[in-house]
Length: 113
Length: 113
Image 1 (cartoon, rainbow over the protein chains, first blue to last red):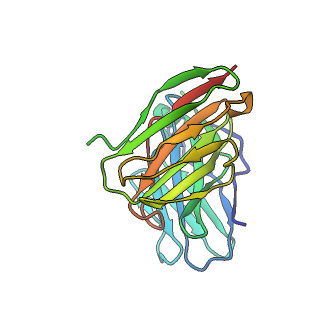
Image 2: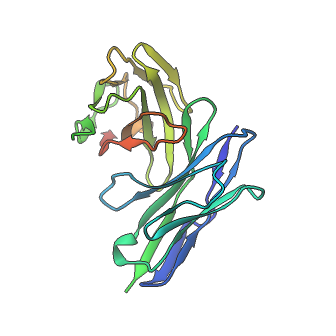
Image 3: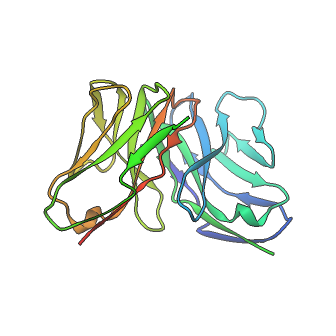
């Protein structure tokens, strides 16, 4: 069964610093997708970035980038120049089986001024 | 665009009562999902649907039922509510979950006492 592991329950970072949130996955599929979502304290789920297993380049979306290391089965999210508004829960997710997405336990990121 | 709309936003149930959580989307997505999120945890899949008339169980289906009579609507039914069903429930939809992100509703916070 596919499993997503986020080993950092909480992270504390100074404003304007870069931060890396870890995600490892376990899959036997050859083709799969990896997603990162942000959940602020207000509770909604916000899609941040996507990486396909066959994508040759790491995905980037503004201040978000994905450090994808296929051989190590890791898909770490990098946030550059962190802002106070980046404080939130962050979830890594991957497609499991036919169509289902499986989520990790999440990392709570706190940005300190 | 309304996106994914969930109702109600909050609900308190007594043990043994039943209710239906409503979910509708206006993006013509075939794939729809119900997740639950317990405090401080990630999302767990309850049920999903790949199109009208087709539903299947996720990780934690016990105590729930779903139906998908139209592309737009995917209601979740709780029968005989139990305290263990106290959670935040998210409905989501996607064009194709392989490479397209899930669009989430704003969630329903359910308390069973």
